[in-house]
Length: 82
Image (cartoon, rainbow, N blue to C red; front, side, top):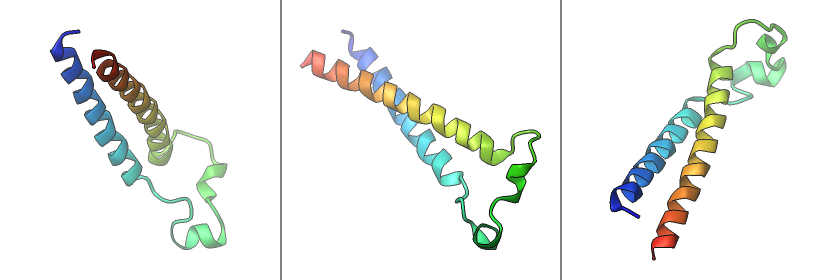
């Protein structure tokens, strides 16, 4: 297997790792502030356009799956070479 494929897979793995960390860090907690303590999430009863929290949840799922797939590919390539 050419060496540049190993480097490309490792670079993709690093990018997905950094993206996953960034997306998780930018999410708000479920019980943030007084709203979570007293009344819960009031905006969840209205279904309109997805808010930023809904989009971040979706991006987190995609980033996690991408990170798992790229990690498995990197592990497979590095184990099969050695």
